[in-house]
Length: 344
Ligand code: ATP
Ligand code: MG
Image (cartoon, rainbow, N blue to C red; front, side, top):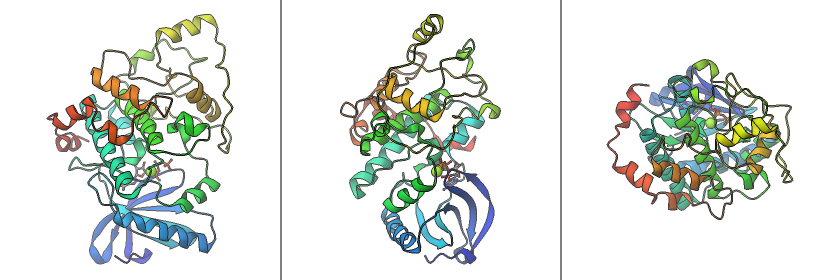
């Protein structure tokens, strides 16, 4: 398929991320609806050509768990990537609109993402590098697919040079400067699944917030506290952090924190952890867990504890996790994703 800008008619905007904008478009000659991602890149023509060459690998990524690729082209000074349109959008917008996602559905999501990651790695030696709810998409047939994986080293470089990533799904070893491995994706998956099941991002500032209503989150998530994301401080280039001591807390607050087991608290309307504090928190504090204990199936708790092993040597690979009991149960559970998607 030879894609050109002129053949693509914009139907509407789907969303904006750090690196660019995604729109719903129709490709005139084939009457195909697509999602067009425009990435702003400050790179020389030679580098852009290299990026385009690298993106061609995506033509070979064919799996029911991977968003399909129609093609990419340069539209100076941008790069346009055209992919399968997923009409129910990304899972972050799903939980922000409808609240926490039922754990049986989260199990199916987990299964789909693990299948996608295993395919990318086994068939192409690709590590995703950006697993998070906004990169897990669903359509009205109930298909769940991942997108925005790191096929192009040059693209990753160009974006990293220009933008500060939302690095909050980053594993402790990555924050400390280790190489990406498939296990870093598993950490990001663990954080994402907890976020979907709880209906909120699992890291938040626990130091100076009044946490009296922390347990009221369930079912109360409105579109208006959808901004429970980190408020970034000034832009900051990511460099390995030295390990540091956890901050001292006053004794009352620290007791409350202990009682809340390993969950990290979140202020009602938003939170105030800087990106640096968050990264330090990920490195120094215990990993988040599915809480309260006992609310979710034991297999799901166990699965997520494995995903969030801070030592990557103890963390399983996606392929190993496909054999976990929670995933085996998910394959067999009678949940009808198409029916669930129709409610979105
Ligand atoms: P970041 O830039 O930090 O990675 P992001 O993933 O939200 O964040 P984009 O990848 O630019 O940013 O995507 C923006 C939004 O567009 C997504 O949140 C998603 O809701 C929507 N979107 C992306 N790809 C598609 C697609 N293929 N079909 C439907 N909607 C999509
Ligand atoms: Mg994305």
